[in-house]
Image 1 (cartoon, rainbow, N blue to C red):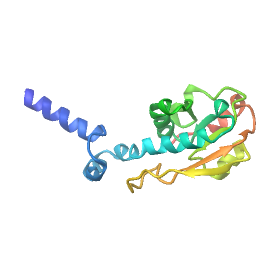
Image 2 (cartoon, one colour; image 1 turned 90 degrees about the vertical axis):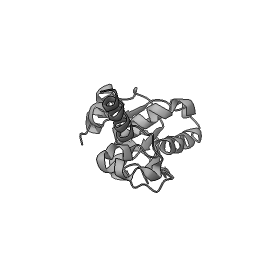
Image 3 (cartoon, one colour; image 1 turned 180 degrees about the vertical axis):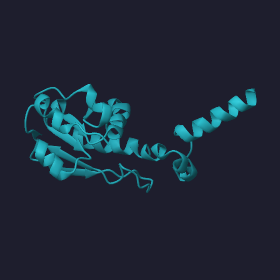
Image 4 (cartoon, rainbow, N blue to C red; image 1 turned 90 degrees about the horizontal axis):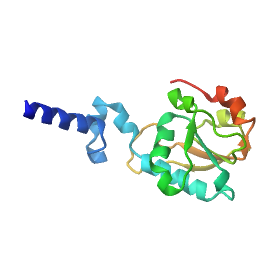
Length: 165
C-alpha cells in the first residue's frame, strides 16, 4: 500500500508540477497540456518587469492580461520584481474585479492590437515574450504593449473585458 501511494504521488508530481527539465517534458505535456503552458512564466514576468521599469510613472501602472495564465504568472512571480498585481477579464479571474479607476499607464499583455485599441488609448508595442525554451505555447511570442490609459473608467468597461474560453 505504501509503495502504491508513493508511486501515485511521484506520477502526480511529474504530470502536474514543474519538476522536470523543459527538454524532458514531451510525454508530460502529452498527458497534461497545462504543464506546457507554464513554461516561460518567469521569462514572461521578467519581460513585463522590464517594460514596467521603463515607465516614467510606473507606480501608477496597471497590468492587464488577456488570459488568467498570464495574470497568474505575474501575480506568482511579479512581486519580487516590483510589479503590481495583474488584472484579467478571462474566466473566473475577472470575478476579482477591475483595476481601480484612474490607473494608468496600462501594460497590456497578450491583447490583440484591435482589442487593445477598442479598450485602451495610444498603445505601442514594447516587447515580445520569449520563453527561452523554444516551446510553442500560448505565451511564446506574446505582445506586451504600453498604453496611455483606458478609454473609459475601468469600472465601466470591465464587462466588455470579461470573456470565457
